[in-house]
Image 1 (tube, rainbow, N blue to C red):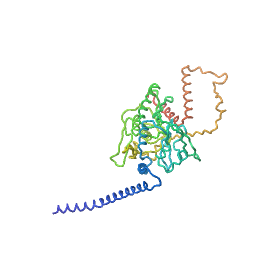
Image 2 (cartoon, rainbow, N blue to C red):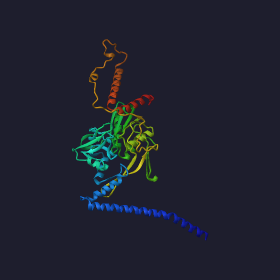
Image 3 (tube, helix red, strand yellow):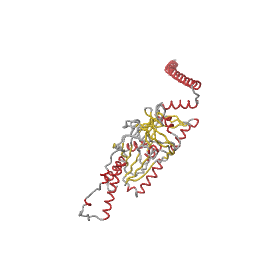
Image 4 (cartoon, helix red, strand yellow):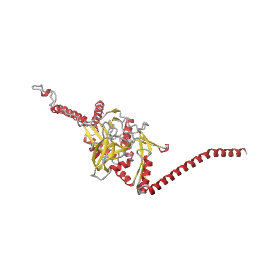
Length: 441
């Protein structure tokens, strides 16, 4: 009887606890179904009573896109055509203006222009706001709708109205659409420094990086003749997460690269580096600015946290979320924010960005600045130019040649400061580290 009483009491307590929960869940489901019925009523009224005949599929797609874009600026619905375009873009070639954009305060904001594209040639800058396309306002449009307005046949002309910080008035920019061919990585040498300019993270990025780095090292006569590497991620809007991981892994021997944390703890993931360093232990400087976003920030954050690189430039964009593209019926797709990513030290850069170790602001060029032509054309004079000056016979011809070569390198460095101050600063850091390195290294 005591046992039966215990079982009966347990059943009563269980019923008292679960009963209200079941009732709450039923009430919640009823509310959801009522709202879905409301949606169906509105859909039918639009279809039957709107002043003009509407396309039902367009209405449904607009409703889906509105639901997704209400979540955050990076979640959206991709129509079959948009999904196909996205697949082409990740392969590195597509038609358009050559800008990566997001949405802020109802307007289209440029994350960054892509190197050697119509937008880049037209002078579009990271942080610009696009308010009108061909005279039509983009205010109130979704990001996808605004992007659709900027698309068009290759060779066609478009006029965009730009608002730029520091300028009082908006201005128009005329751009001719073109086929955008992305070269993911461009490699060159500046003296003894190898500069790796990564413009995007697509399927070509790591193969391009690996091949370009090896070729540049060989051209300099081997790794012993290299004083370091500059990883230029400025105005790189990001791209594929797996490529960011591969690029980070290329310079790390061990340790965590990035972790992602979703809604459920079980969905979290951590990615660790594998042995092998393409730079063979040589120092690295990473260049970033306000146009460096997403995958760029993963690379910069990983190398910074492991103290594998010195990060130079300006604070990055601050996009610390991961989007998953999910195929849908009818060949469309859904881009949904599913996780946040964290650097190896456990920091999220969402809305904060990666802060550089050394802040270096790129000086603004003033095209209207007056040039002192008289000073530029005035010949320089030195002791060697004076009549009757003593000659220097204490050095050999080889030593004289080395001095002249060093002087030429210094002049080239000075010119680089005029052309790209941030890159020149990065190269100066590597020269300094090389000068301080022990002689046997």
